[in-house]
Image 1 (tube, rainbow, N blue to C red):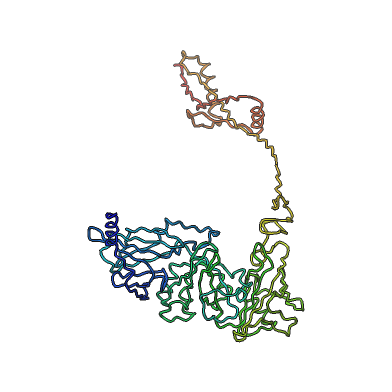
Image 2 (image 1 turned 45 degrees about the vertical axis):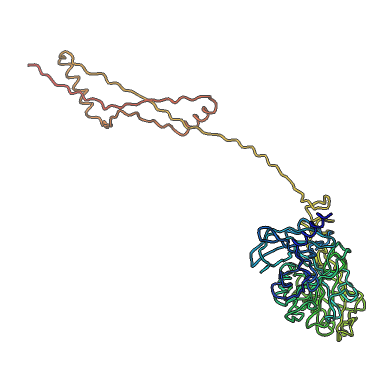
Length: 544
């Protein structure tokens, strides 16, 4: 027992409890500086006031002259940052990954994080030599989902950081938001702190909508730089990853005055309109797969709109319904509502539980007004679109062309009637393909020219001397020679090359016929050698 007492005494001497000292807080651009006179630490995104003051901090001395620092009751804001129905998950062993520890700007990696009940955890920082310049920052695993709403009275309420009656907000009395936005808490909280001196304020740990911390960010928090609401919203607005729908609905008139996570599974942003007193919300009549309570466009103004002004502003502010703002339209109005007719589509506008449409061209829009808002008002109308042939009602009640070859369709995938040349097969219009086969027979006759070369050889016998002839023989010979000399004899050039003899065209025809009937044809080659006739001189021998 004595040994156990000594052991306990030794443990208490090793751990020096820092939390007993008087603690003060400084709110700076870098975070919330917790000062206790022994170990001053800067905390970022862990809350304000008692969130920081009530932290339990202990030192554990090491034999090498360093010490370990144990900090308990830190808030784990990543616990169900988004509802699990959105696919978000976070495990206790991930806590360490999203806690950034640094000293004088240098990162410290030798840390351990241990989960504790009710959304808390403890942090152990090892082998420190001092607490000078020590900073601990909580970062966030993913963008937080934020539903956007409008406070219909259009005046920022007093006492922002608490729940309000849903009937005071729109659209649709808070059932369906204008849009679900993604807000980067890492950059958003940094910007609010650095530009406005505003720090996140945690309330209780809530078990509805997933076990999570309730938190608020507004001008009602610590606000060192006295930012008004437009300045606050300008500081946090840029951290929204998808703000296009809000821009389309409100332009620059919307100002969020609080970003918060209360008991529901998704965070909220509530806002008001700046420099605009009256608002008209246009809802759709269950187009495509949309919720019928989804606002598709809004019309804001500083005064109540007449019938003509309403139709003009509708064309300007509802591009999701109007296909071509320059197209000529025929407007009409009666006690049942307002109708617009275009060449390929039309739509009807009717009342929808707040305010009322004019019943003739001389009346104005009626609004539900709020006394506290100094003549501010809200009106809601419903639009029902009818599309012409070849189109269907798509997103936000806009007419969209049917699939290819469809003359009528239910949606972008289901045809009900096909164009000429197509047939309906399982909801699709398939083009009918006709195949024509042409067979051509070609007969080719090839003429093979042949050449016939005729070789003729004329041989002249050599003349040999005979015995002297008689006188009578000589006389006879002279007569023959004389006859030969008197005749016209043309001289021909004598060559050794063969001479080609061309035959008549009639002969060619005969050759073609022969070629077609015979399997083989043999060319006949004749060589013609023409020699100049020899002149034999005979001498007259006279007898003595």
